[in-house]
Length: 133
Image (cartoon, rainbow, N blue to C red; front, side, top):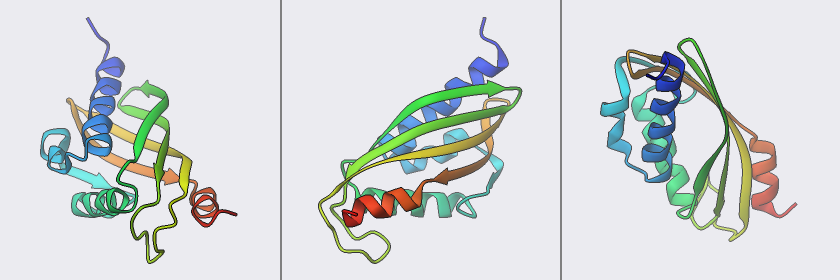
């Protein structure tokens, strides 16, 4: 029998695969609680809009979980995103350069549903890679 932490990690891992890697944006209804709080992108819609922006700019993007840890109802994730800049990204025309950037995510999972998310990305490195600096 799995512990609560193992189940929470599994929930987050499955969400990341569906939402970020397969771009199944409507899966939020399956994974996110009704009282979900999006602390990085303001709302569920903000999360979906940001993910669509990433998909448009980096259609070959792939998120890889490097490390996950569950403690109580919190799941911490360190992952990378790799892709090729092929579409407009925050006003910057496609450069055709590859990115390989580290991201950090903090999720709260209650009763099998994600109730809260906060994320950080190394945007300085990302912009340097896009610009070829």
